[in-house]
Image (cartoon, rainbow, N blue to C red; front, side, top):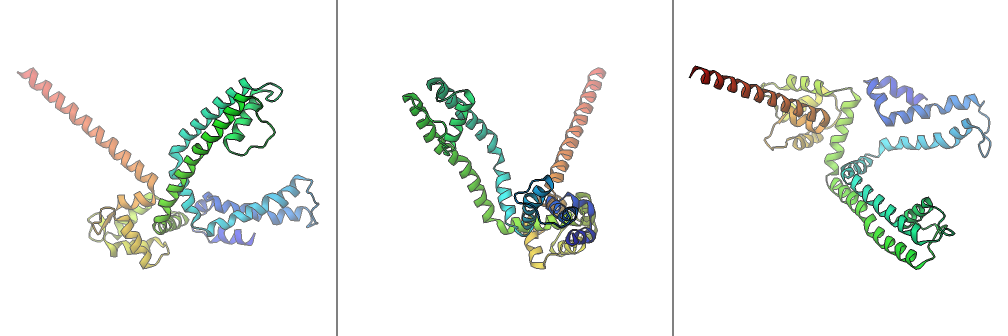
Length: 299
């Protein structure tokens, strides 16, 4: 409770603090003391019988364990690897459903009802076979049932290696650039902690741009880091500068900064610029068409 109140009072942005899922673990964990006070700090029964005792014995310890995730920055690498692999998930899930339902249909048709009573039982057998679990509660007894399950077993071993390979490859790619990923994540977390948004970055960007050329050199970028109170060393700030300098020009512009720190806002900005460009092109085309019409009428 004291830890939660201290974090809540000292945080620069209360709204940003409450939006962080890891901070909700602090909030839920802080409920342990008042809930124990409700029980009168009595020794809980074993096994727990009431809903309150179940929460205190099973739920709250798990939530307190999740609080440790904030100290494992490498956990972010696994999340990034899974996020980058999500594009392949719909197709793999579709193929898994097709293989499972097809084999379940064949098993249901060739097996007697005494062994496979219904289609859901057949789907269960196909599912545990495909995942190589094999509980043994249902199994084939006919020749074609054995053939179907054997083919399904061999196919599932090859198929299940696909998502493991995809996620493993993404994790290896992220792990190779782990220092850059963790450093950018640390900066992004610090900005969210202080409640900075994309519009605030643009204002600060213009403020530290002393020569007014729309870009920041290393000295101006270090001043930006100091003004934003990110709390990183000059060495790490230099590494961030090299990461953000996509074109290796020795300077970074606001778009490069937003692309790494606020990717969603960067995409929205690019879409707005694209829409504005299309509107301008449409106006130009309309003006040219009207001009051609006027010339045609005069002639």
